[in-house]
Amino acid sequence: MAHYNGKESVKTEKSRQKKQRAKQGKPLSLQGFFVPKIENPAVVVETSFKEVKVFDDGQMFKAALSKNLPCNKVLFPGDRVKVEDGVVTAVQERKSTLSRGHRDGTRVNAVLEDKIVATNVDVAVIVVAAKEPPLHPRFIDRYLIVLQGSGIEPIICLNKADLMTESDSQILSVYEKLGIEVVKTSTKSGEGIEELKALLKGKDAIFVGNSGVGKSSLTNTIANLSERTQNVGIKSGRGRHTTTTSKYFVWDKDSSIIDTPGIRALDVSGLSIKDIQNFFTEFAGLNCKYRTCDHVHIDEKDCAVKQAVSSGRISKLRYESYAKLVEENCEKK
Image 1 (tube, one colour):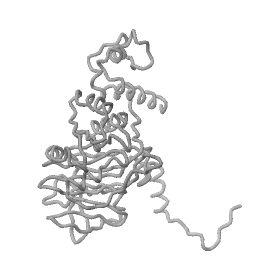
Image 2 (cartoon, helix red, strand yellow; image 1 turned 90 degrees about the vertical axis):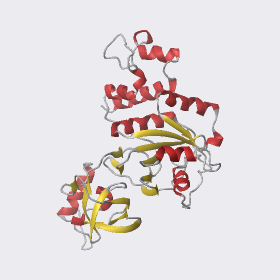
Image 3 (spheres, helix red, strand yellow; image 1 turned 90 degrees about the horizontal axis):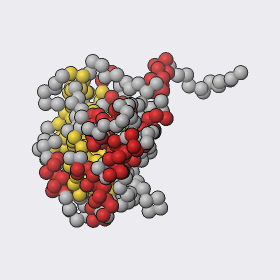
Image 4 (spheres, one colour; image 1 turned 180 degrees about the vertical axis):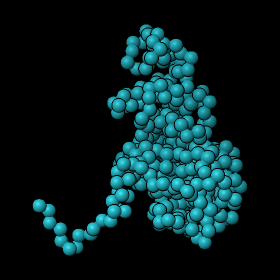
């Protein structure tokens, strides 16, 4: 029999319900807060449990959320909100939402449900590095799937371009052939910075990618900030986290950047094989012998996609990303 002393805190029914909601992966509701449009809205810049920082008319100030809801569970950088007497009373309906699955490898902001990273984004810059950490095309492919599913335009940015190898160039050319904008930058030399700014001007953008690729350094350079960043860990060669929460910066008229924490791995689960195939647009128009071909568990003589890989028409790296996603999603079913 269990014994409890008088110092044992008794959980209220309300706290038990909150814990149960977290276990079930259900986000707290903002029902009643969303409205179609807010005149002259403030923009959420940063969130914590008790309050949010909002940007309005060139100034930053703090606000609380009514009805005792935790701010960092229901409001996110990029949200347009109505603030009255220091309290957020309404949230404008979002034009886009970028989220990632709860199995993403990250040291910060671990949650049990899908994690919303930012809202109201026009374009997402997938930042990768030539070295420290090295370029991983599979990570790019996974983010492209997330962005396509969110209806957000992608741009691939190779930072630390002064360290770029011929192999890196070949990998990037695969995405250029798919019609994806690719820009090469260096915050040390200034290479590509003006080109990236031109692509982002007049848009609400978000920088995403692994730790240590230079997202914060790029944000600081574009927004002319002096926020400190850290170098990549020498022993592991993997990036250290320099940003622990998503933050919002206005750097020009109608131009903003949301800088996000780096993550180790991006979970893309719950997709059907057909869904995955649709994301790999280079497969379109290739007719396999079998209509239900998954392009993985079948002999090459019967699979037009495998034949296209062998002939060089489809990138081997892209196909390997596809096959890995198929295997992962099959295992989870």
